[in-house]
Length: 60
Image 1 (tube, rainbow, N blue to C red):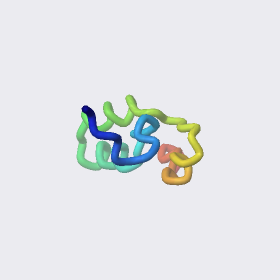
Image 2 (tube, rainbow, N blue to C red; image 1 turned 90 degrees about the vertical axis):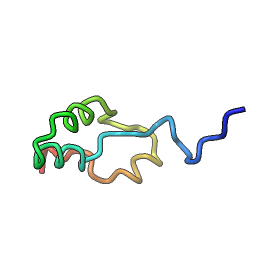
Image 3 (cartoon, one colour; image 1 turned 180 degrees about the vertical axis):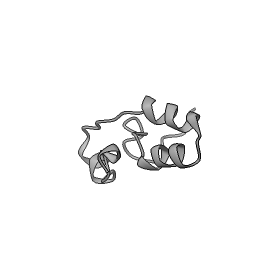
Image 4 (tube, rainbow, N blue to C red; image 1 turned 45 degrees about the horizontal axis):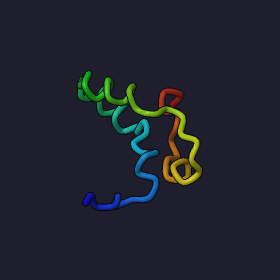
């Protein structure tokens, strides 16, 4: 029997985290940038949005 997820909205995560973009650029890690590109850029679940304040780091 599988254990229940340990967080709510586990299927809606992960989303694009700015730290992956910034670290990939600063540390010259293309694998971080590749992962960042694969993740969901525009979450629609309100709880995810509430916990994900920086959604457009490229505009910074």
